[in-house]
Image 1: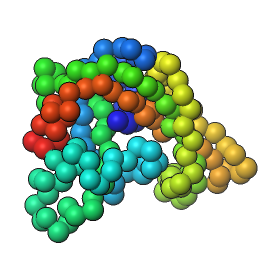
Image 2: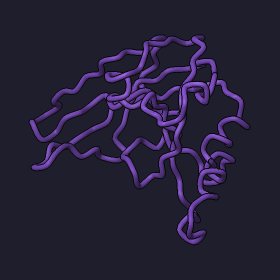
Image 3: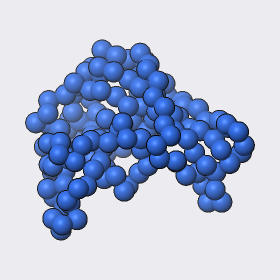
Image 4: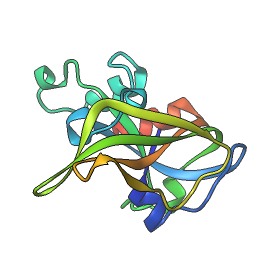
Length: 156
């Protein structure tokens, strides 16, 4: 599951490997964000299947991929957050290019770094030029959680 940089900065509490957490999880389709391949769930995973089952047009659901996104900004009540144990944390650093209207993430040029604890502030920096930079865009977290609860969360 992915924890975006802005979520940690805004509202997330620090955590470490072994920490028990309660997070709201959302499924975001691949077209809704730019994330490294390591963050994407397989098309045939039970979570992807459950999440895409609610797509109004089944033809548009075929082949959709996405990721689980942890959020503290959910409209769901706190008691509906899913409980789990953090098993692994990886910092996601993505190659970016500054453009007129913002920053574009370059697919296929990401780096994962193992961490034992999270950070609430992630970094950005330049590589070769102002137009060629990188950003720590979030954390990839392996979370031990009840799969049935995840499926219910994304299919509702």
